[in-house]
Image 1: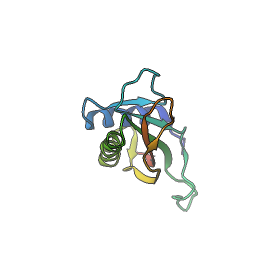
Image 2 (image 1 turned 60 degrees about the horizontal axis):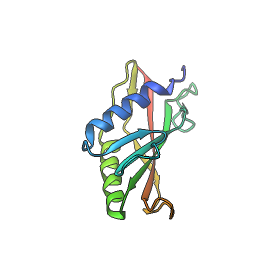
Image 3 (image 1 turned 90 degrees about the horizontal axis):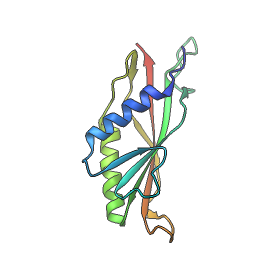
Image 4 (image 1 turned 180 degrees about the horizontal axis):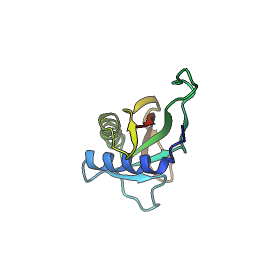
Amino acid sequence: MTPLPSRPLVDALLAAWRAAVPATLAIHDGEALPDADPPYAVAYFDTGMKSGFHRNLVNDGPNELRFQITSVGKTRDQAAWVADKMAAAVLGTVPTVAGRRVWPAVEEGAQPIRREDDSTALFYATSQYVTRSDPV
């Protein structure tokens, strides 16, 4: 199996999530500008790899794309609101990518909501996910 270049799947995921959350919630890819105004989320994607766990008899398996969502708010409640909206979008949408069958995302981990640091006074929470895809 030829590995999937991750960009088409990343673009499809971002588009699906942006369509699924309120317009007041911005979703950034990889970084938020220093002047970004909360509430917002930042998605950090890896480059994708062949699954080491879901192999078949010929040692072939789906591609995995892992990512982290960082939910940012001015208050603890606002960061929790972002985290809830993003979890619903990530777990509730399966995008379409030409030539691929995309599996639903699965949450792999999360960190509690906490203050970023004293310089920004923002709160954030992180959740880690994985999605898989196969050629069709």
